[in-house]
Image (tube, helix red, strand yellow):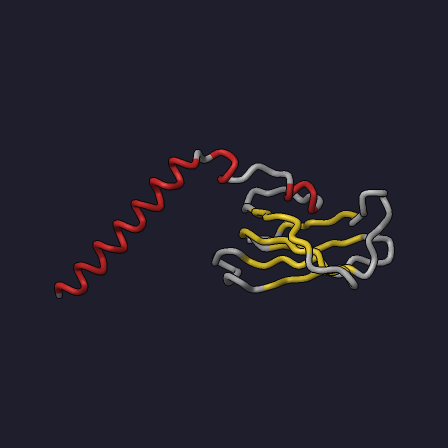
Amino acid sequence: MAAVKISGVLKDGAGKPIQNCTIQLKAKRNSTTVLVNTVASENPDEAGRYSMDVEYGQYSVTLLVEGFPPSHAGTITVYEGSRPGTLNDFLGAMTEDDVMPEALRRFEAMVEEAARNAEAASQSAA
């Protein structure tokens, strides 16, 4: 399994490179190669260029700029079949949350809760 390259130029709204910034990726879930809550970071150069090889998984993206509070840019998901791209490509990509109706998400959560309750009941009966 190979990592996916995420690279580009980090710019502000006026098109100027953002300097003295750290791009932070915090794993939101466990995967085969990444543990939940682990953090990877990249510091773009003076021209705002960044490049990182990112393992498959889901990450919370935060920008840390000197003198400003942390800014949550969004969540990205890197799949095994993901093509290399910019951070904006990944931030703008559709996710499960975009295509799964809220009712279905609630139903899946109820099924998971019922399974946990059944497991707990069987363990307490034993």
